Length: 480
Image (cartoon, rainbow, N blue to C red; front, side, top):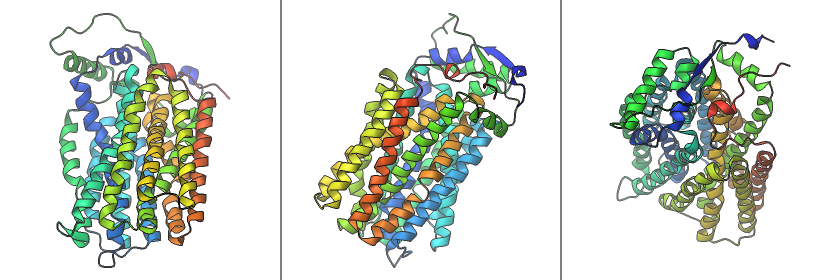
């Protein structure tokens, strides 16, 4: 093992200055420009489900249930590849550069999807779209957590991740309107729907020009002058005409990054206390990935087969479910900074598992009408959305700055591989079989993994509420 006692450090007040900033219009502009990544992912996820009926139409691409599930799995696979690649680059070259690269990839790929002509081309473009979205996750979440004040980090992180569901609502409305015969109809409507993310992405590219590099990242890469200059500019933007407080803030010691990112990750993940944190984060990510990528991505197919909902009406059925998903992080988010991470993360994971198990039992026995099924899905995802968002929050908080983006990418990627990539294809086959009992077994598995992750969080979670990121990450790994 290398001698990390000889590692280089710098003492700085920048983390303290960032954490004492009052909430301002500057924070609002930065967070809005970055949070769009989650909205775009929600838009893509919604279109993948609500356009199912149109894509199955023999007059369009004529996909089967299994082929639709397969394309969703490839989309997720692309997101995993993008997260791993761009997460590594975000730690090496900075957060700001990645904002442009990943968003450009998304804009080009989603536009190309609208011009797909068969299963191969559709799937290939969905892979590239997923890669752009996956790359956004790592750079965006790390940048947000490194900028916002510690006292508000939990609620803001969950709120930002919750904008995914604004994208879901937007996608539901777009598909419901565009597929109407009086508008574009099935033949053309699905193509124009996939192009809907392009103007949003282009507008955000313009907004992100004004977002600074993370001062924490600059300090960790021996760019002290740039970090101080950026921090002073941020304070001027926040305080405006008011005087910047002259009171001293806590000086913290930050590790200068000399090791290659992958070598540093290997060192951290195999050392105490990070080994236990790594296992927990992988469990949280894998559980929510299976839950969402299996259960949520298949809702459109369930509505088509078991409730005889028309293709153009699926989008309207998604609206109350998406709203419940959005309200969960918004309403429960403040409790993560008040009650604490361990209780709230564990509680939301377990609550979503119980709600899914009850509703799937009622579904199996034919006791749910369309409206009652939607209500139960809304209750389930009210808690599940909050739980899923908290998984990203956890990873971003409990690993060092020099590998923060790579860690988010790693656990998102391998969590999705372990829990989510095969899920849509499996559930597509379960639904295609027409057996409610078979589908219940899939739902029961989803409930089990969420409940197990919730118990693990109760036992081994980190109480990160209201703490500076630097206090949560020991400077040295224990030797072993």
